[in-house]
Length: 110
Image (tube, rainbow, N blue to C red):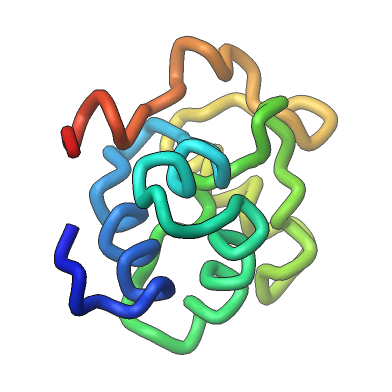
């Protein structure tokens, strides 16, 4: 990761690399960046809607829940975007979360 990127920009660069049909967590991004907290990742994503497309809908909490859904333009948009990628959701939780989890550390290296 480029050291000259702001913390928010560093988060955006990781999120843009999450593959279609996969999800990751706030904590996994924070661990990969090694210079922020999961909460800071959430703050960054809350501000991502006014930028180029950042697939913030692919970032969920460590239990597979769509905790960020309230920050999307509509209350159902996060779920709709995930379902458009063939990700099943039940009760605001990703079904097969463990199989769909994408690790930035394993896939992007250090």
